[in-house]
Image (cartoon, rainbow, N blue to C red; front, side, top):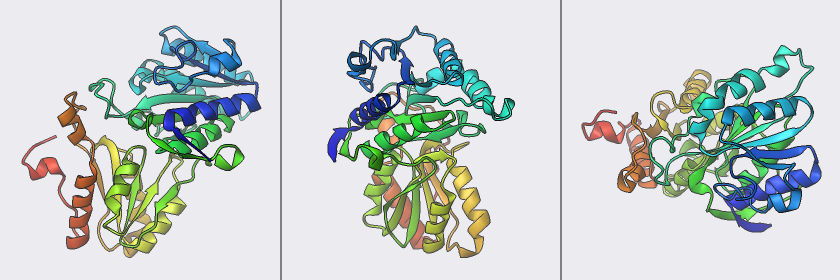
Length: 336
């Protein structure tokens, strides 16, 4: 076991897969000579050379499309998108081409590629570079969508994504890149896609989180006897683990770094409500960001994302009253 930062765990995962499989290659802006804009490919050019670690022009449509073609021809490309928003100009390559080729070919063509993108608030990058935008890809059949919440997940999910025989989108919370954690490397450190992690056992309420909201949920859960689940894979998500936990606790809270409208938590709440309605002690609910762009101001940005104190207060009220509490912006007479 080695202690490393999340960004270092990603480098380690990429290196381990590239050593094990010569078809694995990296493509993206500033990933080679500069070691990546967030240093998530640092040192890989020196070891693997420019044919396998490729700096690209500023053309997401071009190099993502090239990766689709390379994957169809037997390579395992890993594409880095500097900010998730930049995937917008290449979304067709992912959701219309990569996600559909296996189906269009009757199973004859596979597209084993990974698209990595940094996401989320917390770095002061402003509203055009701080979104998570899971809904761009999570509703696309043919794609697997995963998000790491710590160094072990960054290592384990990245390796699993590269080994997967279809396209995987890895959404990496930018605010976690510098966070440290213990990492088990090798086969034992690989985390299967589609499997959630129970981060903390509990009996009063199930809290489901993703990405950087996992650490928020864990900090808030200490005084609540809450079971905290890191969803890890957003699609396909682990219904067995979540339903099993809610069956035990009778309550569900989803904490997400997404706007209230259209967030991924709707799917979790809907499934739990429809399948476990008679076992619920209270209505499930979501703790989200408001329906507003991510602010640039540090003080406003820190409030935009659900905080530990806010989650603790919301869940405490929920447990005390059995009612779903109003979000902070409605409590304060604001609209979102």
